[in-house]
Structure formats: structure tokens, C-alpha cells
Length: 69
Image (cartoon, rainbow, N blue to C red; front, side):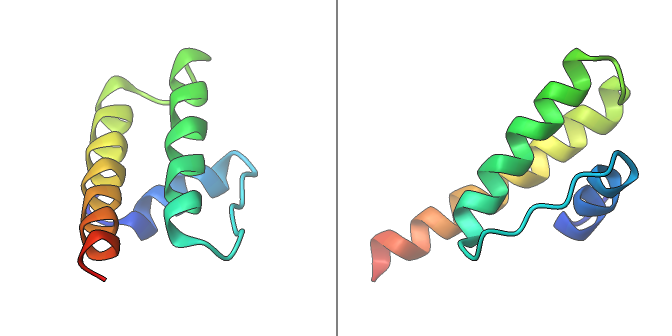
């Protein structure tokens, strides 16, 4: 798993499609959903760790951009 797209594809395997029109909100919802799947033991620890790392880094980038505006 290397991109946010890969995270979306992982969520898609479980029937989860997230689109709300706000990229930051979407990423936060994806993070919550990955957390829930991990707690339900539907994803491995490696999948969980990589997905959370990707999502949190993208969230940080978007927040930095918003602060700069």
C-alpha cells in the first residue's frame, strides 16, 4: 500500500465508498473506517499501520495548505 488510492481500494473490498466533497473530511472518515475494520480484525496490522500512516500524512499536508491560505 503506497497511496491514498490503495487505501480507498482496501475500503472498497469491504463495501465502503467515501465521498463527501471535502478532501480533509474524506480522509478523516477513511481513518475512522480503517480503525473500525482493524478493531473488527478485518484487516491485518500491517494494512492498518500503512493505511493510517498514509492518511495521517495526507491530512497533515492538507492542514498545512489550509493554514498557508
